[in-house]
Amino acid sequence: MAFRAAVLRHIRLPVQTLKPTASRAPSQWSLLRLFSSHDDHLTKEEVIDRVLDVVKSFPKVDPSKVTPDVHFQKDLGLDSLDNVEIVMALEEEFKLEIPDKEADKIDSCNLAIEYIYNHPMAG
Image 1 (cartoon, rainbow, N blue to C red):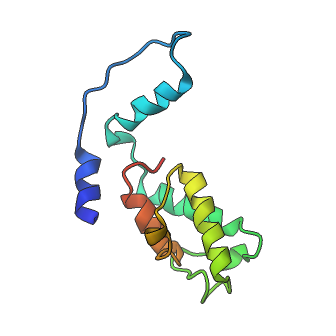
Image 2 (cartoon, helix red, strand yellow):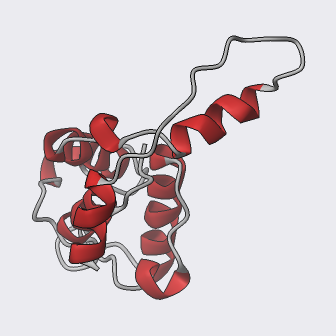
Image 3 (spheres, one colour):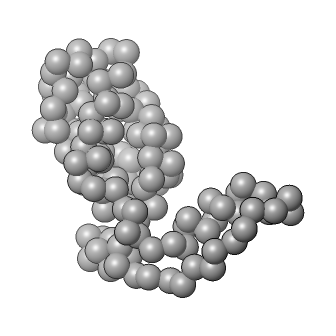
């Protein structure tokens, strides 16, 4: 998986610049971004900051306890439903869909950071 993500970060596809017109919906601009080069890929620091912000904003979390190494259940006392809600909030924040099989594995800030940083479509 890490190899695949590394390769996808370096693939460059030609992109045609389009002028906005009434016939082109905003969704077409989103589609263009999908095929653009990944020079705009998030830095690790951006991912860390945004993941931590999402976790800190969770109602049951004491923000002072949130670090990149914090475990949702062991360190923050969250239950499995809270874990699911945090993963859903991360999906919304980064505009991506995490498959259930992968989402079930994300039980800490560190795992969330690694998954999102290595995801080629995280934005």
